[in-house]
Amino acid sequence: MEKRYRLFFDFEEEERWINERAAEGLLLRAVHYPRYDFERGEPGSYIYRMQLLRQGVRRPESRRYLEFLEEMGIEYVDHVGCWIYLRRPAAEGPFELQPDLDARIAQVGRVRTVMWVGLILEIVASAAQLPFLLDWAFGSGEAAWANLLVLLFGLGVAAAIGWELRRLDRKLHRMRSDRQIGES
Amino acid sequence: MSEQGALTEAAYYILLSLLEPRHGYGIMQYVAEISGGRVHLAAGTLYGALTNLCDRGWIEERPGARGSRNKREYRITDAGREAVRRELGRLEELAGNGRRILGEAQE
View (cartoon, rainbow over the protein chains, first blue to last red):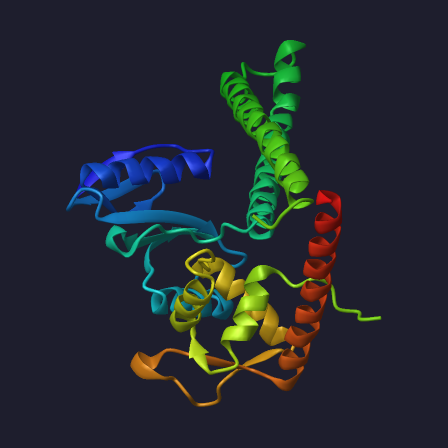
């Protein structure tokens, strides 16, 4: 088992990275964010896809979906939250899960929602540091280095999320205008 | 005036394929065959469409039938038959107008 550590913001980039590893003969077997566990295998023997479910994997609707995928020859690899990792032997041909725009628009919409929640939490966590920092700045409180670090880190993460959100919004806008013309 | 909007290509072909009971993989193969290899139903799309068509009452899971290797089978309902006929009518209108207007434009 070979382990790699990566932090991804963009699921398309993550999926691409997993498939690049598969092309090299490193086949993904488990994900324990941010650790990816690979086993050695035939290079290019599997194609991997990721999908964001509406509900957790143990919910009945998700189970039915995973059963259906299994009937279609698609193997469940692992999950992180509502994200599932799937694979299919490359020998069975090209592997697309949801080429239709409506499903892809819905998925990008859900990713956006999760990111917004993350952004708000980061802002709140950063704002919570302010009372300590203000006390420190105006001399009445103790040195609040830890609070400062948390604030700066929080703002950094918030900025990264914000940047990614802008990118997703542009993508969503493009997809919606494509949707005016066709289904995929 | 029909209240039914345009069906997606996937929905139309799935309804046609379920005039005979089939399971998911069978639907995918049949649709690829009748479309001359043009339409490949992706698993996620297929699942979403099957769920949607079931909710509308246009298809149903065949009770008790799990086919070979325990796969779930589906079949069209009377309402589904009606829906796909209406859709065919709409497509014929589109094709007819297209042929006529493009034909006129070439003269």
